[in-house]
Length: 362
Image 1 (spheres, one colour):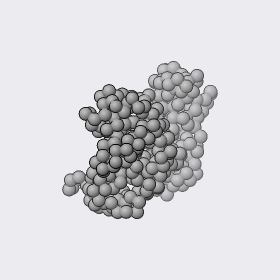
Image 2 (image 1 turned 135 degrees about the vertical axis):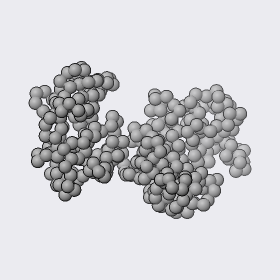
Image 3 (image 1 turned 45 degrees about the vertical axis):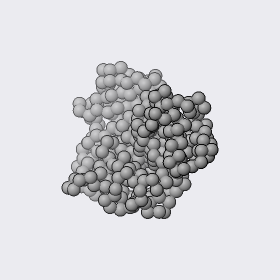
Image 4 (image 1 turned 120 degrees about the vertical axis):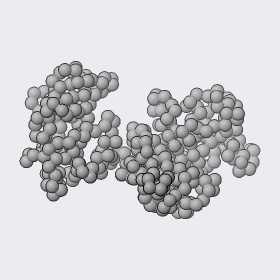
């Protein structure tokens, strides 16, 4: 096992274009499950490939276990990678696929078979499956074979590039918990790439959020949710996404939905110091509460998404323009066209500078 460090690591694909990864500084602890998450083009896969040695660096360095591996070939980095498409050999059996890298390393047959069977037991791959070809397996079984091929190598670091993207929704939920539990049992440093923020939040010890090739924030899932450092992280983390609205600042707070929404004193002070006449406020759907009678916000329900235990209400506020989503208990659901009143606590309101996207104090 080993820790991993990106030190001002950069990758530029073409001269005159923005870096795919721009001066990335990231420390990954020994035994940690680190998730790199972001939208398409954020640089997360490029960062993973830089660590694997599949992409050269145009600046900075990468370390594995305090060893600078920037110019070390992939085969000599002591890493194992699980690809999005599994990359299994169709003509080989499951056992042969899992043990192929060991065969290339001239590991004795008996030792190779032992490690393959140990990995198979960890992954609940029974002996009958070991003699099958990949085409005879389900998507979930193929994914586990790809995991097994990485496990038998006993590497210092696991690298996983969206390994669940080819699975159906139900199997993805089941398999991500299995991967997280397996990583905990093995204790191997793992760097996992996904575009799915729910996957990131439920699997990672810490999550690194990237956008435009730059690291936006790296923290625990709870801290990312409670304390996003900027508007991008706030809008990206959380499902459904945070409501983000540009509103004018008034003496009493922010004008929204035909009423004045109180803001924390620290936010008003920061906005005044920045000379802002408006700001972007963020309210998570679960922080908009249905209320009877008068309240801070009023509006009309446009659409209801029934999710069973919960319901998502799409609401047009009384000012006639702003649209918000509120999460409610399923039994409190409303109907399209119904008038509703919403309450929100001032401490649940996030505020951002509309020019820089940075979060204002409070």
